[in-house]
Amino acid sequence: MEKLFKAIGTVVVLTIGAVVVLGIMAFTKTGFAIVNDGERGVLKTGTKYDMTEVQPGYHFFIPIYQTIEIDTIRPKLINYSKTEGNKPDTELLLYEPMLEGLDKKGIPISLALSIEVKPVADQLAEMYKSDGDFENSFYKKVKQPNREAVQATLSKFSVDTIMDKRAEVEKTVTDLIKKSYAKNPYFTLEGINLKDIVVPKAIRDKQLEVQAAKQEALKSLELVKKTENEAKSREAKAQGEANAMKIEAQCKGDSVLIEATAQAKANKLLANSLTDEVIKVQSIEAWRAGGSQVPKVGATIPFIGKVEDLK
Image 1: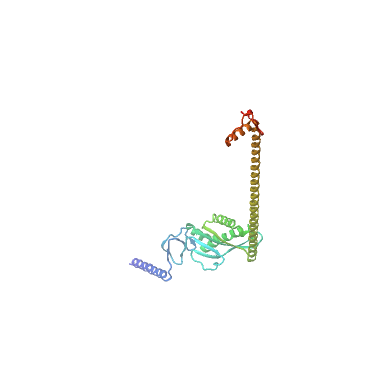
Image 2 (image 1 turned 90 degrees about the vertical axis):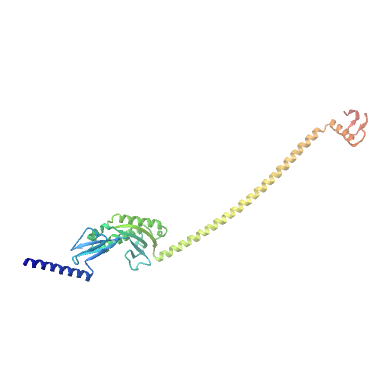
């Protein structure tokens, strides 16, 4: 009988204990956790972390003695901005002031960037064990490496020329950040975008003045070239007209010379062909063509001679 009472007492105590625990859990809303898709949990029992991440689902744990920390494993975008640096963060979007660094001469320059990182799901427990919690690890493994990469990048450039080397700046900072995340076991780099390069206002104003002067000089140079081209065009046109007139005159001269030469040759040939015999025959033909009677044999015709000489 005594054993029976002891067994009943044990059951009652356990039941009361269970009710108390459940009551505490219900009242304090502890003792169970819901891990959603896109999240992982890290269970801590006493002072030690369970090195297996808690998967999505419903999970119970012993209040006070155990805790479950739940973190997202979705990508987080950090917006380093000139105008939005003080906006409140959300779970997946963080707002930070621009990252700064010094150029070769020690002049401060700022970069506006957007950098997206993603927690490594199966390394959350190890991250908690190493750095204490998600926030500390995020600062050490994400924010600090980003800042160091920007500082190292800006030290390679000069404030005088950095505005004209945007592509080179973006490549340099991207390469350095990728190199940093290649050794990062807890976060992977999803993307990086350089939005703006900001130099001190006084220097920027001076750069704008120099740029405006260069553009004005370029316009003047283009105007000079245009004037030169127009002058060369007019010169070429005049030279072409002069050459055309010269060629035309030459052609006319050659034509006259050829005509004169041909006429002279013709006259010479004609003169050579007018022999006395030809002249006599042509005269007789002229008499006959005119209807006149041909002179009798023995008659004398001026410049021809006696008629009997004609054949």
